[in-house]
Amino acid sequence: MPQFEIMERSGIGPVKLGMTRTQVRAALAIYTDNGLDQNSHPTLDYAFGNSLQIEYDGSGRVQFMGASFYKGCGCDYIFRNRHVGEYAANELFRVLAEIDGGGHEYNECDYFFPNIMMTVWEADSQYDYLGGESRPVYGQVGVANEKYRDTTGC
Image (cartoon, rainbow, N blue to C red; front, side):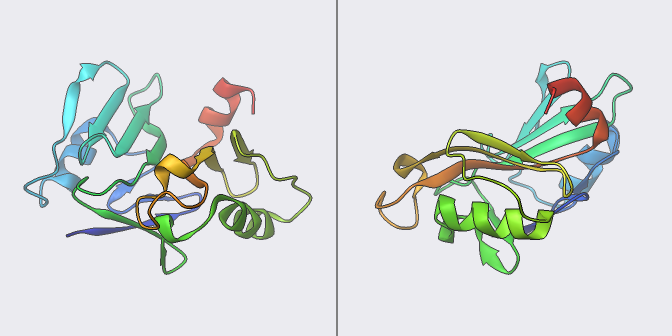
């Protein structure tokens, strides 16, 4: 099963910020079971059972991607040498806040870390697929660029 590293200010696995849809398709083509859907929305693609969301800006380049791990999605998402599902939400928030430069207050709904251009969304135990739903885990971890931040008002 492929393991995709989540890298701040860069991307998730082979998908990088600034890529075109054609480049995304080529980057994911080596994974035969990628489930790439480039037809459901004009500015969004989904892959690996919709666990990888890829959003494009007005010029057709990747401006955001979000990883939402669940068992059976077809890949694993890794951040700082750990599976994202191993992080309790408050622990991942603390790690991201430290990398971002501190001064952040834990938010279980959604949060944008402006210096590393990363997002977290919806901490809930229903996303704790590795720990048997015993603790809150973020439902999505995202990587964005400046254009995305400007369009969301973060």
